[in-house]
Length: 371
Image (cartoon, rainbow, N blue to C red; front, side, top):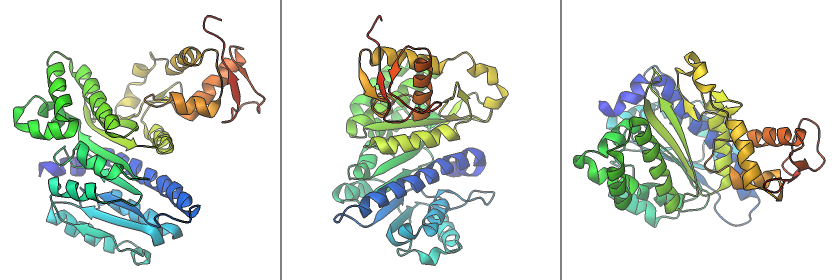
């Protein structure tokens, strides 16, 4: 089946995708649980929701995201008591295989809430149901093998509630083609919003392939932000030759803390970096093309931006990172490295701190513009 192609044939890329989601789930769950423990009121459950779950294992037998998430929960006493997992797939063969894979997990009986596995088509009915629900803190993973069923309304139907974050995966090439084909207009309108999709169709006709990709991903990110997803972070997957984009994984959150956690995870899973700045893509060909990335100087660019954007200000490192990093590829470590270099070059003045480190509360004084 076409809908299973990526799952079956691109196991290395699929495993990176699965690792990103599972690693984020582990840290996200810890943050949410610790926050709940400090509150006398509020929900005492958290959830993981996957509407396109697949069969549970890749073609070669390795574990996919549902199995990894459940194993993380089994290892954590709090999650064993609090986690509710719902897995769905419209393919009955997939859900049967997934149930079998779940039953075979060692310790699965220790979970207070038995994982729910359903076989349903994702469409208007599910969206309406989610819109009317008040969700407990939920990590929502949407991996529709293409784009059918993926919509702004679907993402927002879960993201609207406290503690809810979303990760979704889509086939870039199918969306790129869908925007140029009237037969798929309904799906594209649902994904981008009709007005934005119409504008986007007009823009794409004169653009090169690389420009088309930049515009499509940017417009999707902007649509998510307008919907309420304040922090949006894309991660790109290249094909095996490294010549074309195959998929994008996009993370959406209303909170900087979630954005920060996923940015660090994505940076570590990136297949390349330059000056310590991650590419935020997985490209199996990168290691064969190291010179391609040597012409960019991303940390030098960051230094220049900080001197302009914070000219004349006194501000602690943590606030610099929170205010400046959204929509940029830099991690907290990148900011600290740049600030230490600027301090060493006597361009900025910093409060006392340990040599070789730059703590979150170090106060930085930037020179005035033109100084």
